[in-house]
Image 1 (cartoon, one colour):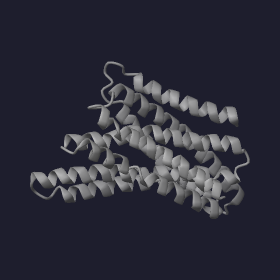
Image 2: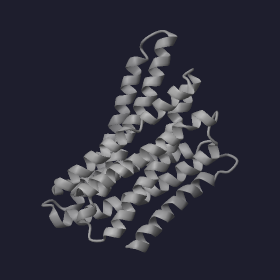
Image 3: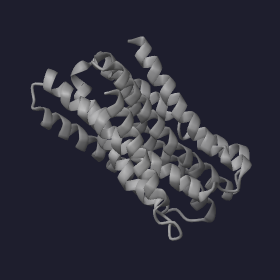
Image 4: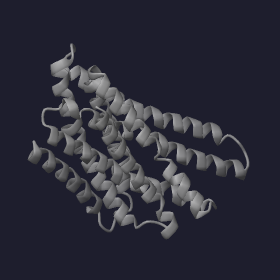
Length: 267
C-alpha cells in the first residue's frame, strides 16, 4: 500500500515539475509559441476526456457493482456531478473573491489583486487535478488488470502534466509583465502547482484505506477532469485559430485516440 502512495506522490511531483517547466519559459522567452501551446492544450484535453471514461468512470462503475449497496449508476452519477460542481464552486469562489478585492482603489491595490487572483485561481484548479492522479493510483491494488490500470493512471498524469505546462506559463509571464523579476515570476508560477502532490497523496491514501469511497472518488475525479477539459482547455486551445482552424482540434482528436489506443490495447 505504501508503494501505491509513493507512486501517486512521484506522479504528482512530475505534474508539478511540468508546471515549473512552463513557469520557466519566463526566463528564456518573452512568451511561449501560441501554436505549440494550443496543440498541447488540445492534446491534453483529448487525453483527459478519454481517461475520464476508460480509466476513471468505467472502473468506478465496475467497483460500485461489486461493493456498493446503491445502484452503480447512482454512485457514478453522484460522484461525477460532485466533481464537476466542486470545480464550478472553486471558480465561483475565485470570482467572488476577485470582485471583493477589486472594490479597493488605487493602482497598487489593483496590481496586487490581479497577482493574488491569478495565482489563487490556478492553484485551486490544481487541487482536483492532483486528486484525480492520486485516486487513479490509489485504485491500483484493487484492479484486476494491473498493467492496464497502471497505464491508465500514468496516462492521466501525463494528460494533466501536459496542460500544466501552459498553466505555469500563464502565471509567470503575466507576473513578469506586472514588473516582477524573472526569478520571482518563476517562483510564484511553479508554486501554483505545489498543491498537486499534496492532493495526490491525500487522494491515494483515502482510496487505499477506505475502499467504500473508491467508486465515488473515481467518478469525482472524472467529473472534475471533464469540466476542466470542456470549460477551460478546449475553448482556450481554439483561440486565435483563424489561420489553422483544425490545428488544435486535431490535437484533441489525437490525444483522445492515443488514450483510447492504450486502454483498448492493454485491456
